[in-house]
Amino acid sequence: MPASWDAVADRTDGDYSVDDFKQAMYQLVSQQCLYRRFSQHSVAYRLIVRHEKEFKDVADMMGLKLAVNTRHEYCYVRQDVAKPAPMDLAETLFLLVLRQLYHQHANAGSLTDEGDAIVNLAELIETYKQSTGRDLDHRLVTLRSLLKSAQRCGIARETKEIEDDPQPFAIAILPGITDILSEYAINRFGADLKANLARHAESRVLVAVHSDEPTETEQ
Image (cartoon, rainbow, N blue to C red; front, side, top):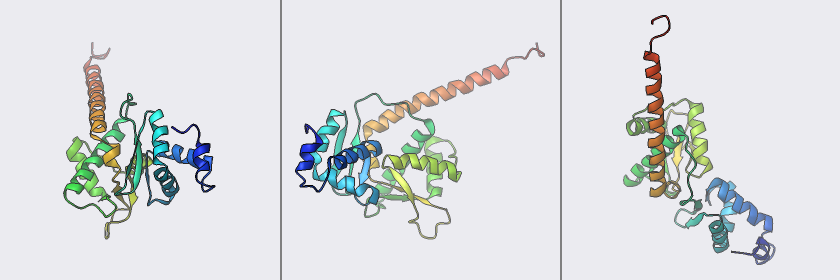
């Protein structure tokens, strides 16, 4: 691990400052996945790839795994060993359905050259129903809220790449989803999901039991 970013910055002959390294590390940790093709990511991505060893050492000290996908030109960090924070049920279901859709598009050979799976809202809603047995709240404000949470960690973003689609937008599921939602993460989400669903089911039973109890006027 570098003793400080100063020594690393000095080796760049003034091309990058200490703050550039700190900002790149912060952006990577806070956003989890950075892509060279996105303008808001490109500076940090290039710096991280150019000094991959130093960034990996710092990430390791933070309990994170840093890796670079050279084929689709993105880098990411993932925490596989720490106890995960409880996931919001709606977000968990949404992420798992996105992961399933990406898998389906990859198997069908329908990914873009950048490795994205482009999904329209009708496909999302139908797959969500089939996978979860629930109806997705497909109001635009709800969908965009869920999509923003996925975008923050480099999993998906809004797009208009489907021609003649009457829907206001489509979803580009990004290739980083295969790394961010690894098999371990999917299993972890699955355990959290089962526990969450069990709690919801128990709550419904308790409500039903209480509603069946006679009121004072009925006694």
